[in-house]
Length: 352
Image (spheres, helix red, strand yellow):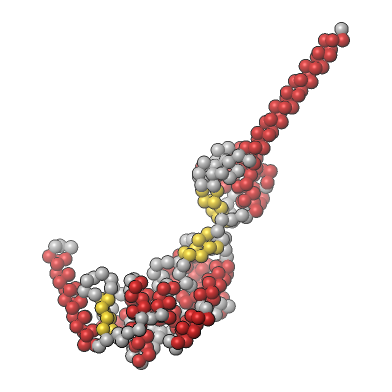
């Protein structure tokens, strides 16, 4: 009579052990898939704004990062506290990341650095603010307000008029959530790093301050897109400046008209502005654009020559012809005008 009872106990124990083993196996597999196994099918850059909710983040990870197990994300989110701890930022999710790691990344604010790039022609504060705002969480309106704030800019040694000199086109690594002061701090750090004692000495050798070098560089930048011409054109304007000639730079006149001119005509040369280098001798008060570093270095290392004049090449290849004398310059200018007239006639004849 005792054996059946003993067998029953063994059977119950075996079933219990199987259930426990199954539960342990289930828990172990869940732990493995939640915290050890890769959970994503695609690399995805996730931007979390201050008003982004945890559910929206999970949806985005599911759809864009191709999460293999939504349940893993939800369990880790609940365990780690995603709803309460979600931090704004830029996060790059890679296929080999686990669900737990991604949730911890979002809660701890382990951001991926953002590249902030200034490049191309930047001739207005609006364009500068938009360029920064498009790449950072900071709104372009905030950046624009800072660019116009005298008190704020004074802390960096600049004014709303000359602030273009603070920004050196390049690619900089920041966190996407950087505040406007953080962004300006970074550019000031790069400005101070760029203006080494050697560069300051080279500026002084041209009888210029760093700010004046930036002003001259902005004119050079406005004259050509051909980087190989930067040192030649810089040499022309430095020759004019040191000889007491007016700079007579068309880009400064364009600046006076907010760059709305298709062509600079004789009537435009009389505009009364300290930026009109046809009317006033010397450098304008401040840069007329954000000059590239290469233009700044061209002013610091100009070609040494006797050129005082230049005009567009009749080859229409974006280059210029340079001259020492005004007579030679007029000859170059007439050749360009003849080529331009012929080109316009050819286009009219072809119906373009």
